Structure formats: C-alpha cells, structure tokens
Amino acid sequence: MGVSRGRRGGGASARADVGPAAVDPYRAVDRQSDPRRFARLLEARGSQRHQARLRRGFLAFAGVGPYLHVLDVGCGTGVVTRDIAARVGARGRVVGVDPSRTLLQMARRRITASAPGTRPTFRHGDGLALPFAPASFDVTLAVTVLLHVPGSDRVLAEMRRVTRPGGRVAVLDQDFGTLALDVPDRVLTRRIVDGHAERFYAEPWSGRTLARRLRGAGLSRVRGRVFAVVDRVYDAYVRSMLGRRVELAVAWRLVTPAEGRRWLDGLEDVAARGDFFMSLNYYGAVGVRR
Ligand SMILES: C[S@@+](CC[C@H](N)C(=O)[O-])C[C@H]1O[C@@H](n2cnc3c(N)ncnc32)[C@H](O)[C@@H]1O
Figure (cartoon, rainbow, N blue to C red):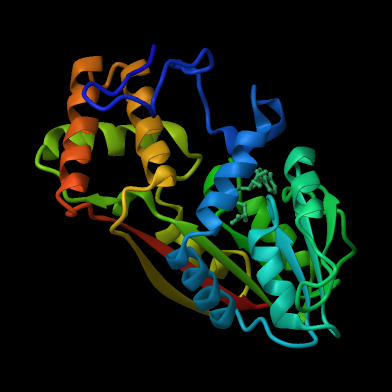
C-alpha cells in the first residue's frame, strides 16, 4: 500500500516491501531490494550544509585531530570517514567498518588520491563483534548507527574494547522524540511521526540515552552535547524522508491514505509559502577509556 501525492505528484509511491513487517533497512542494507538507494540517501544527507556543520562540531567535540588513529563504526559510504581523514592528516590513520558490502564498495569508490589527509581504509565487519584487537585505536566513533542496532550496548562495549587506555569513545545519534515540524495538524503529525519512530528504530530516543550509556559501558569523564539541526528547505532528501514515513504510517494503518495525502499536501503548501521548518536534535557523547 502506498500514498501518491494528491495535487503535485511524485515522491512517495507504492513499494512491494512496505508492510507491517517492514523494519529499519539500515539493519541489513544488502538485503534490501535496492541497496544502492541507501548509499544515495546517505550521500544526499551528507551533502547538506547543516550536516557538514554537524560533523565538524561533533568531530571537534570528540577531539579528532592530527596524528590520531581513528575507527568509524557503521561508516556507511564514508561520509564521516572522509572528514576524519582530513582532520587526522597525512600522519594519522582512519578505518571505516560496516556490515554492508554495498555501502563499503561505494565508500571505497569515493576516495580520491587528491583528497586531503590520510587515505581511509574500509573493512567489512559488525559493530557487535568488531574485527580488531583490543586497544587498537586512539578514538572510536559511531555516527547515527546505534539507534539502528538492536542490543547496541554490545557495540559500545566493543568500541571500548578496541580503544586504547586514555583514548576516547564518541557517539552521535538522532533522537526522534525531538523531530519538530511546523504544520497545522498536530494530531495527524504525531500519529505519523511518533508512530513511525516507535515502530521503525531499534531505539528511536537513542540520542538522549548516549551519555548515560557511555557511563554504563565503563567510560570515564563522559560529556554530552546537543546539536540541533534545522531544515528550512523542503528538498529531495527531506521529501523522501517524510514521504517514506507516510507510506509506512498508511501500511501500518496509523493513518488512512487520504490523511497521508492531506498531510503531504499540507507540507507542500507550507514549503510553497517559504515557511518549511523541521528540526531534529542530535546528541553527542564522549568518554575516556580508563
Ligand atoms: C544511517 S547509516 C550511518 C552511516 C554513516 N555513519 C553516516 O553517518 O553517514 C547507519 C549505518 O550503520 C550500519 N550498521 C547497521 N547495523 C550495524 C552493526 N550491527 N554494526 C555496525 N554498523 C551497522 C549500516 O550498514 C549503515 O551504514
């Protein structure tokens, strides 16, 4: 079941793999009908100016700088890995690890010899059992990964294990309890947005839990920071993100197809007036391995 946009067309359309059993595709990108779609989505997100600012802020907060040996867990297509490579410089090292071979292939293709910094290497592997010896890295990071992984405390334990004593573990996640949209129908918005978050992510409120969970994983001197991301442009990435939420809300019978269409048309109207507003909090946390 799908929702086509009533007045303006395009965007959310019927897809065979949408249904009550649909789960977060980032848990198993390679098993999706079009795995490369997720590579395109990650690169589209990564190319947004506010996302580049978010990465700069988070990497500075995590203390990623020259000469360090850094691991990027759940690196996807390498959006964050490439930024890390530029920060650690030619004398540093960065390794990206991910369970998706499709995303890793894209990550390798996107590295150019002329890019600043060290040349990243990419390795196939699961954050639940990282393929590295203990104390291998100065800094271990995971950016928008934990919320997708059931049982992600195990990922934190693994990140701690592969980080050297005195090194840092740093994590960043969205918190979908903070997704705010300026649209007229609050009741319908909650049904779509909160209904989707509850059913889709392993931990939709992951962001706010991170500092507590780093302390629970045995890290010391844990600090947290909130990064608010604001979208004022209803671009292709945001359209796809919200359109997908409506498709699933219809498939899960949280809203009718007509309600879904009305909601998307309302967003188009707001955007046409130049009033589109969406914000989402990302939370970062960093701690030191004793
Ligand atoms: C939303 S993407 C984020 C990718 C990248 N960190 C970025 O910010 O562009 C989530 C990533 O987590 C990866 N992932 C899913 N399950 C994982 C696991 N068990 N261990 C490590 N990574 C995992 C996915 O393959 C995907 O690349």
